[in-house]
Image (cartoon, rainbow, N blue to C red; front, top):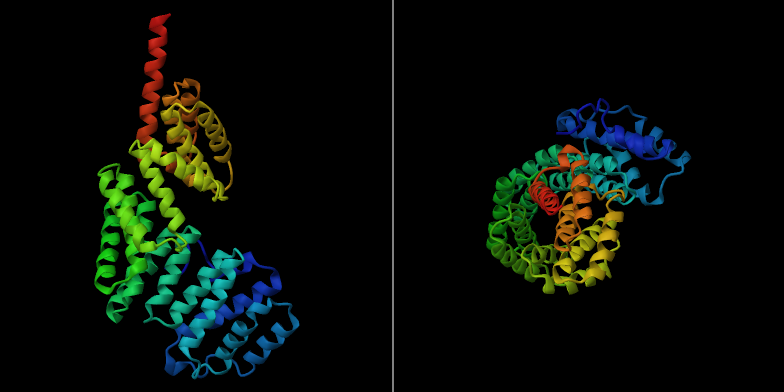
Length: 382
């Protein structure tokens, strides 16, 4: 899948994401590489006009471009003058360099487009296809990500490039887990875990164990097994891995789910002293409110409940709001704070339909039942 539905012009996101002169230079380079990659080698000699490279170099010399792009764009310009001799490996490397630059600047459409050009330039290499899948998933294009991750798996299996194979399986598991398709998610995490064990791939093992833990948590069953998967992931990650804090957060979430409040509270306080991301802070405060209410700590419950409620309206928090609301509702029910239980139920019912699914929906339905039972009990008392 090389385009989004309705994307009539190849690389249109490049033109949208950066200033006009820069975006035109990027789009021209992207189109040159895409055309070169799509043309059989024996027909590349006469692919571009003789003065094409001169025109591109003249444009870039007159345009204020980013210095970080000078080497990549000047190298890609040689594709039009030496089409038959251009090295696929070099073209791929330069496209990935532009992709990394674009991602760092927030231009995810451009990052995906250049990673895709890299993958098309080296069609037998699983690593660029893996990068397209990774970036498309980050960009929120799961269908496109899935096609490229499956391509990477096939290429990696053929080339016996097991690290790319395992990483693609983990990302495909992530894609299915986000879509709440737990069976295929578990299957691909297991594929990754098996190849990690056979090939001694420590990072792939850590990420696959982490994924299996999340599957168990999403299913709401066998939470002891989930904790064992978490412990295996923790050992494989080590303390310095970038995803170690994320794993610790998930393990703390698991402790709250299992009712181990006293173990969870100090971990949540430690995470709140480190996390700055509004989404992570919202979830941490919701979990802390839940655990504190269960332990009878009214002051911490009150503070964390209010903080999580405020953070839920921050940009980017939407995918995690349902779980946060479920924990806030449980916290309020533990504290016998029935007005807030009603408040969380109403807020959940006001979410977009795609966010009113999964385990949180069942938990909020139980809270709504508790509200009704409490209301009926009050009527009987009156």
